[in-house]
Length: 212
Image 1 (tube, helix red, strand yellow):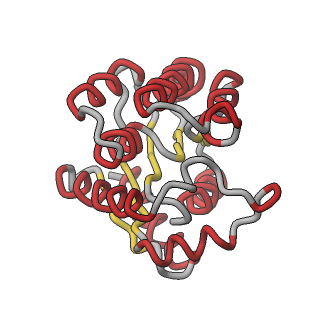
Image 2 (cartoon, rainbow, N blue to C red):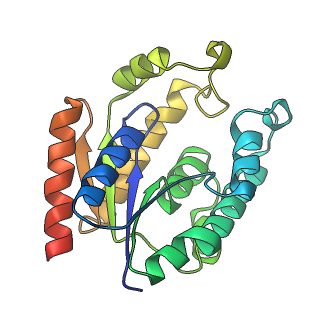
């Protein structure tokens, strides 16, 4: 495939969605075709799964295994319907979360079998792996403060945001562990800084990557 898949990862409130949007704007201004996607979601099927996973009352009691399979189902649809067609025509795909989120949230933090999760990711993603991953790293106190500032319907946290602080400590440790295992793919970004500073750092990295 001639396109590029760039993913944004990190814990809650780290600013990855904001930075993805900013990068997309700069790439489009440079004349590149950019497709923005998020997980779970970005397809009609994915939107329904996202609602069940994060917002619907029926999803409040989901078993961890069910949660894992729903995330995988959303990804499978997204890859086949949106991501792979975009990559085939040479587009740059920016994804707000991808397979690393599943390894960290459902594997390392939830404690499900990592070997199975990696195999499931391979299947659901049809062998697709990110070319470049930005990990926006933020410590737990800063993350929790940002979550309190988020505007939501009726001020309610979604199901994942409502998990205890100990869970998110595992999430952060899990992401940093993955970044050490794959240092050539991961770019760890200090997400505590100003948005403009982070945007400039990401742009320099992406520009260098695309021009390499």
